[in-house]
Image 1: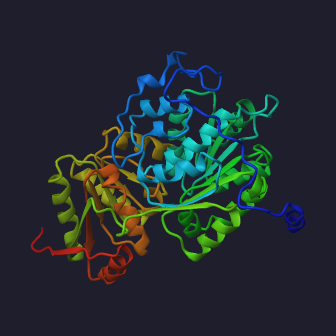
Image 2: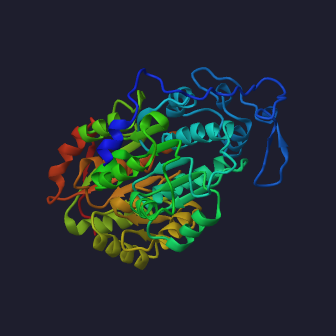
Image 3: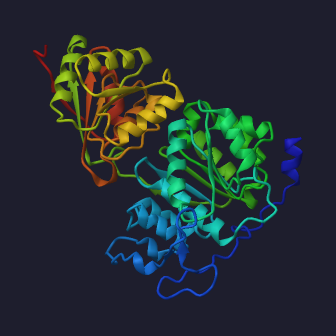
Length: 443
């Protein structure tokens, strides 16, 4: 049946779908039309705001958000978030995505890609409001992320960027109240849905959320969705959305294995392709070192390292839940301010833990790879690999928690005779050698 429906869809006759013309937002003079009227804080006080209140000097080699055709209400939110100049991925993608083109983007976490796709999506929705008779459970935008933590952080950024609009953001993720999410779908107008594949598919199959009117689809961290086994669910979800010629699709991935390349071609329509990755896979702002240790040395070396880190924000990665639990108990016993983030921790507690880690109430976070993948927190000074990851790609994702936004960071990895064999694979993956130091007489 699905094949028959696909065959009946129109064949493409050119490199461009019929796109809506972008409305012009004049940044240099007073706006007179309704579409270009001064922004109001519609969710707050309703105060008028003008672009004159967001002065950013031109800078060589940098793009300002002013330089793009972005509605004032979005620019006001950007100003409130403290941004002035576009990151590299934002400057590279916005010219195409604001015009409605599909996008395949290669970028690592911490590059500003979330704001890049949200700004394009929100701008389009503001320029072209939804039909007044649209049922409330028919979202216009759909963002799919592999982990609950990442989905919630995308939703948080979407809330900030839509603060000065009437657009409503709903997150549908597992591990949190199903009834509360169902109630939102039944009682609120849903403009943007940010979801993990499993929970979204559950709601969609039960027709609690309808995807056949979605105008824009974003697939974030597609490589991680592949490695976590979510692609069959994502394929089912994509089949519920309009044909690719009738929607805008943006796909982001840190890496592009052959399977992801094939899916990107299948799901996008004459996409623009943007790659913003350093020549070395890992950030040059991260000082990387491997401590070669005996297994019994790891805890005393770690304790000394944390105690000498002067209260700096730290993440410690381990491969198994029992390792994270054991480390957490030892750190707590040493009176180190810490928390744990693993699959055994309930989702509500994970959200609260991340919030406390962000605001500085927690100094050290012990995490597994799956839980740690969704940690997008600025100003993390140190990442420790208590055990080396089994997959070299996970090393890249782990240490990518530090050195974000141009800040300097440090990663320390422990290697014993049991796992040192993976070091050459890690170095091959990142395209660089890692400094090794032999630790002795740690007690």
